[in-house]
Length: 389
Ligand SMILES: [Zn+2]
Image (cartoon, rainbow, N blue to C red; front, side, top):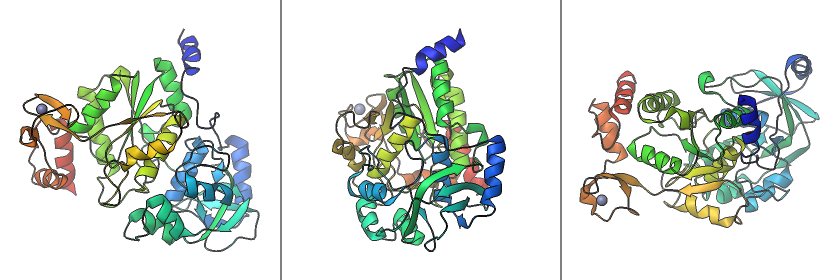
């Protein structure tokens, strides 16, 4: 019974980007043999970002990519957000090397030094990283953390398909689900329409409201906090995950909510990253994706709604996954509920508003913010984290 349900529903989930879920992982004897070959090849040490990208290529989270980008894909992505094939793609996924390699195969070493994969060198090229920064990040300012990272990687890039014989260590093994796993889990629960939510911040009432508004219109909600590398001053992933766990336990319907870790590294590319995040979630089986204000932004590099407007640059249905745009939300004392400027006619004095700085101050002093702003269970987790920090 269960298997026939899964079989029926799996056909109704959104197709992966490009039609097929990529799998670049080998296991068993094949993995052992490739590992042995890798030991004889020149090695490339990857950054945390590149290691995260490799892991996502391995699992199909970056379908249809089968490896790091060759120049034709890189150029077109930087220029107009499409792969050479014409498929939409928003961010370069590149492997940098200190100097041009002479071998046609290279062994790839993860950020922690483990040997993970082999790349077949299809292309070696020099990238104009300042042009990339200007087009992808909309700034060439090296104070931008994503731009600084790209500059630090250097100009020489190697493209080609990868074969992964050992997946990088999962930051949250308990929350690790590959796209094939989330797709199977959605099908098993009978979800066809699933909305994905991305965050790198602790979850407050405003996020909960947005998530639940979205869930009202679909079958299931995938809470997909990013656990890859972030800036040092973002709240640590284990704290954010703990916030989700206490919240889900008490306030979310278990049969309609799934929590899993999104292994990507942040680039802080704002609007472009919002599109990229949506495409990745499509591979995980999401038909809808929530895009908030200043999604994946940093500092004041992007306008509040840039991450919404960028989706207009694609043809209708070109991305297939449906973005769901949300404005800033808050509790309105006069409405007596959560609202936004779209749904509440009252002046801002009626709204419970706390700045990020104010909230951090309160939590640091062990003060629980008002219940209209944050669930007390979440506040306790954050207070605890501030105390032990
Ligand atoms: Zn109101």
